[in-house]
Length: 401
Image (cartoon, rainbow, N blue to C red):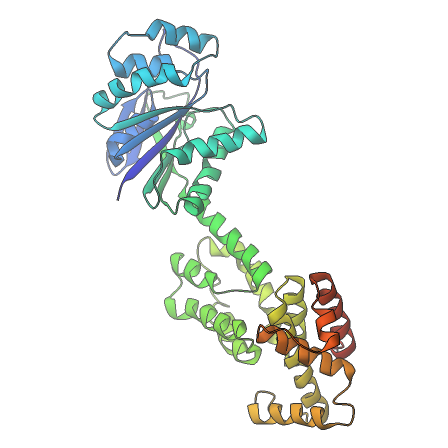
């Protein structure tokens, strides 16, 4: 699998006509001395391709002067850097020479300053242009304007989704951490990969709030070191909830809470422990009807009308069981089916609203067009369906027994 290193090129104050050199410590006895951190990083990780992104005023003249070993067009490049007018055509004249010198495919790419939304989009597009689907990518956020590393991190998230790439590492050569009292000390190399992991947790939490699916946390927790058996309880609970079996989902979630109560969640997961456990606190409810009702309203709010109507209908049956046979097993299929038959056999068929909810649920679940007038009216458009389901839930599913 191809491995691409993407780096930013910035501006810096010249010292005796050169840029400051530092020795960067990669750990485990590996160090590189260089003016450009990305070149030292290239020697350590050995990518198949190096993409250097810079603005029309970045220090292209110094980079090309050191690496091309050719004065061709250097005067023109220096003048362009000084006047902030470097062009892609000018950079293209150095790509082959630099690639030969570094023994790696090197792409020099001109980017905007990213001082507007359009400019920021263009930077992301430039990064994605030379990256192939599914390849490995490392990012160097050391140089560049102060806001460009932020865009670099965002680009990593973008590339993961848009190009399905694997982010191998995000690096920052911390020259600013060298003590002024000891300028000969090595500059540490920081790995910022953890920021992407935090982003994964944020996305999972947002997904939970939007879809109700807790399964993605199972893999995330295993990445942080939680044993697979405990983490897998969330996936098991998600299976039952996604199949509208709220009662069965409670067991795995309760066990998950019990097994993580004493030690808490490890690593990055600790940042999200309170938020995650708050969202599964419903398992402590003794009334399964209230949970079914809550989920029916949740799915309605999210526009998942099939699940909303189905769970709302099942909540209604559960409520009838709780009211008429408090000690009965609400999960007993035969008993639930009998309640439905009893309601249908009543002189009013269980009431107008009961029949409407049942028929809407049937039409949605079977993906069929109903020939019943009030069902057709309710499903004429999204606004009507939302209004009808809200009214039915308000009428049939009170917030207490």
